[in-house]
Length: 462
Image 1 (cartoon, rainbow, N blue to C red):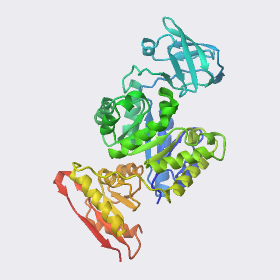
Image 2 (cartoon, rainbow, N blue to C red):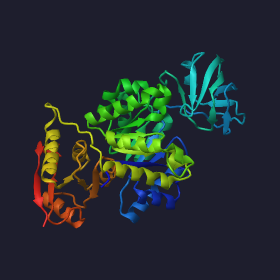
Image 3 (tube, helix red, strand yellow):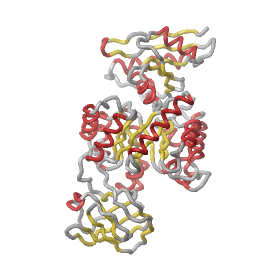
Image 4 (cartoon, rainbow, N blue to C red):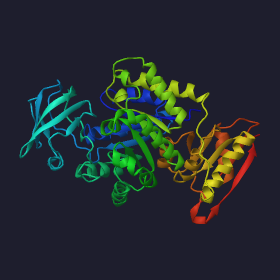
């Protein structure tokens, strides 16, 4: 059973039913919908397709709504290549420009933080504009690092925080949509502090979306400074290497990637690795050796999931990209020693209890099946990175889908309002999760409302 999970971004190259079905059959555990591009009607259609395919294939998958957050984007411009030394004018406003040297920038707040000499980074830093002159409603600049620009690409200012709230009015519209359209996770871009996460969760609660889990995208210096406090508030974090490499020096990225992953594991929070995983497969049917090594290294570090972005959204070979990612993950997992984080002496009792369940499984060599209502127990078991197979049963469909992203966890739906140990044992045999003659650790996990752990049992399967 593959431990490391796969996330694929849907886009123009992968929005039809046949391609989405092929991606699911190839091993995708979750689909990312990028709300920075496309319309809400397109997102509604994609969600409908995914849920219909779930029924057809008998496989639950998670849906992630990735919202822009405080990250501004340029307006509508013709797609073109800007060469080093060319002059451009950034005009604040919503107007559309057919002149490739005039770049509309909707948020005027940027004008208040930009200074002459600043570097404005477009399209994840692929294009860099040096600010030469600031006028009343526009900025004149020179291209110092050339590249391609197109409508709606990102804007950042090197070494300066973005002067916007965590949730813009546009974001609130997207979050409200997600709360009413069966989305499982929301990924918030450009998180800078734990208050950003609390604001999003508060808005979700007011809009009947409190069951949606929040992924914090770590992609700027304030997020690194506040990393542990952000981890406390987040359900999951993402190492967003694209903007990390824009905001900070490229040579820092390997260290920061490892730091974020290690801190997430230490805090028991799932972690996703993203950006340029198989970038060459935008145009090539075969990845580079360096990309294969990058995937293997991520697996060895113990990430919960690896995400493909442009590779599946706009690339020529979306299904092949997922196939290569799956193959490398599976091969690497056959020989890697996964990182282990042991509970501290002052860890809560439920953490130590779940560690003891893993110890039993490793010593007696059985599989583990646990009942979990909201995914808490499954998350506790997953954090210890055991080679034993973990099945997490839940009677909540949303929980089953969310569990799809947890390392080493295979979620199973159980259609019962009240569940006991016998129900779990029966489910394991009916679904053929265990073989005759094998052992099984069965647990109902931690019930906070009862003030104690209910039960755990070791069974011989006859």
